[in-house]
Length: 334
Image (tube, rainbow, N blue to C red; front, side, top):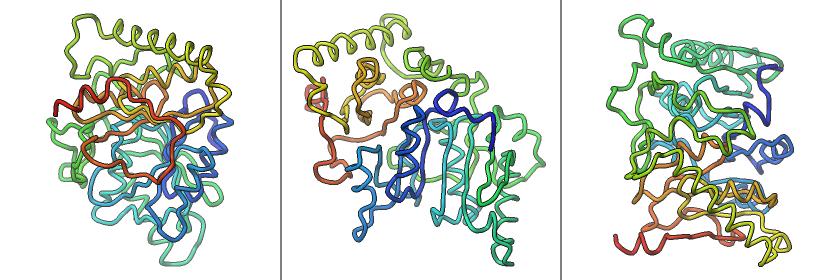
C-alpha cells in the first residue's frame, strides 16, 4: 500500500490502539515488528488479558485526560482500526497525543467508517479529520479501501510556516514531551528536536545495539562517555543471559511474557533477543531514576514508565518471568 513502509526494518515499534485480541500485533511478530497493543480494561470481555495469554505484548491503557506512559517519538507506526475514538473532539487533543508519541517521519493508519462510507455524517467526520491533520502538518500518503495513512513531518518547518493563530499551537519550548507520569494532555503540538534526535535511528536489527543520539539527552551522572556506558550495559547483560541459558536451561522453560522491572537502557531485553529466546520484554523505567525510555524505544524495544510505590495495572499471572536487578536496593531508600 505504501512502499516506504518496510516492516522489520524502518518500521520496528508499533502502537495498536483499541486492539481487540491483538491479532494485528500477533501477525506483525512474524515481520520482526514488536507491537504494543492497548485497549481500555473491559470487565466483560477482558481482551487485553486474552492478548497477554496469547503471548502478545499488550497493556490496559486508554486515551483520556492524561498522557500515556510512553515517551515522545516512541512509535514508528500507530494503528487505529475501528478503535471508536473521536480524534477531532476538543480541538484534536487526543490526536495531539498520538502526534507526541509518533516518531518524526512515522505513520498513522486509520481504518474507520468515515474513510470509506459516504453517508453525510461520516463524510463530515472525514472532512474534520482532513482539516485537523492538515493543521498538524501530516501528509495524507494513501487512502485506499477502508484505510487512510498519514505521515508525520521530519522537522518543524511546516509548523513554523503556518498562519499566525493556527490551532493547535506549538507547545512551549520548555515543555518536556517525555514527562508522562501523571501529566495532563496538552492541546499543543510537541516540537520535533532541531538536532534530529529520535528521527535518525538505524534500521532494525542494527538499531538494537547502536547507541542512539537521544542517549545524549538523558539526565544521568556518568563518569564515562554515555556510548561506552550503553555498550558496557549491553555486554554485561549479554554475558549474564548467556549464562542463564547455558546453566539454567532457560530455553526449556518456554518463557514468553517477561518484565524487566528496572530496565536501564534495555540491555537485558536486548540480550534476550541476541540469545534467541522466544520472548518479549516489557521494559519498566521507574520514576525514581533517570528516564531512559526514549533510548529503549530507539533501540527497537518497548517499555513503560512506572512508580513501584504503586501497583502495576495488569491482570493476574500476566508474566512468566519478572527481572528485578538492583530494584529493591534503590526503591527501599524512597
